[in-house]
Amino acid sequence: MSSATGGDRGLESSLEASISSTCSYGSTRARIFKIIVIGDSNVGKTCLTYRFCTSYFPERTEATIGVDFRERCVDIDGERIKVMMSA
Ligand SMILES: Nc1nc2c(ncn2[C@@H]2O[C@H](COP(=O)(O)OP(=O)(O)OP(=O)(O)O)[C@@H](O)[C@H]2O)c(=O)[nH]1
Image (cartoon, rainbow, N blue to C red; front, side):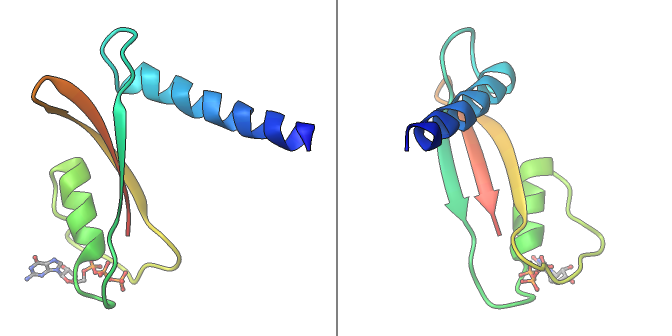
């Protein structure tokens, strides 16, 4: 049990480290918003998340097997927000 807890902490701290190096101001941590996009097949979920996270619309897509994951940092009212999207 203690090793499982330690493992969780390791994952958590490695996530925090990656966030702080890419999505923060100085020592201020970014807030994280996790968004799950759901809907029927072939309605544009992948394109929506790709467009939001990269600013480009994909020319071709294939049916997603499993889950697509993307992320982007945005500044809202001077605060850095990390948006994590699954589709
Ligand atoms: N006209 C138009 N076509 C779009 C739009 N968004 C996506 N498409 C097209 O719709 C098709 C499906 O887009 P995807 O983003 O792959 O759809 P999806 O919902 O992720 O599909 P699954 O992975 O099968 O669930 C692609 O051919 C896109 O080019 C849009 O806003 N307008």
